Length: 89
Image 1 (cartoon, rainbow, N blue to C red):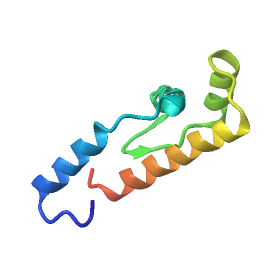
Image 2: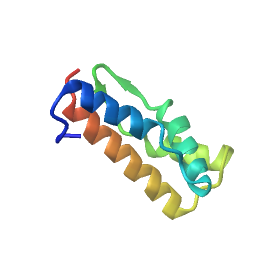
Image 3: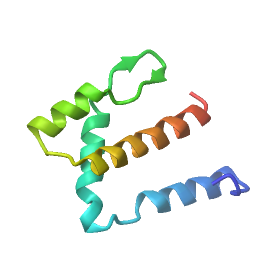
Image 4: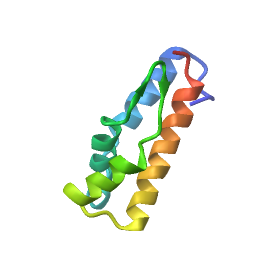
């Protein structure tokens, strides 16, 4: 993305990335991340990490998550937080 020379090209690349299909075997983890992400606490202008309590409750009530699946969700959350911290508010 940083190599895109114009805002229009960057927008084009971002749209292309949004439209890439997920492998069917990983779609459930992406859906779990999206559901958990929607329940993260609001902290003014700063995006907070998904709390352990939300992950634990989700795993207990909705979909039993293995430790490696929790790690994937944590990685996705970290990537989102890092990307959001780069972009202007």
